[in-house]
Amino acid sequence: MPVTKSAKKAHARSLKLQKRNYDFKLRMKMAIKKFMKNITKGVDVAETEVQALYKYIDKACKVGVLRKQTAARRKSRVAKLFNTAKKNK
Image 1 (cartoon, rainbow, N blue to C red):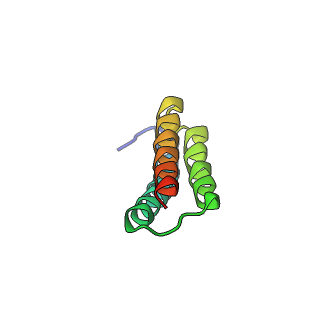
Image 2: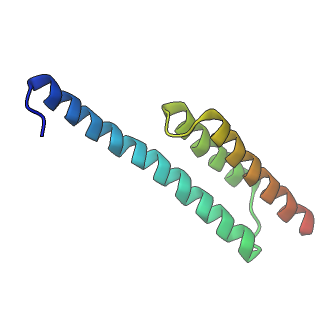
């Protein structure tokens, strides 16, 4: 446990940031999971859903939860799935 006053503040701050990072990551992961589930079921996926998913990925990248290239890779995979699903219909 932290002893000094500054260490206590730093610990509190790290817990707050940890929760924030977890929230961004969870929101993104759940959106991806929902998207994948709809694609595999064969449900029509609107382009607005893809844009919403991009928004979650970009936000996670912006706050530092994901690296830039990781975000680009995930967006690329989502676009690829979306385009193949759209082509197959």
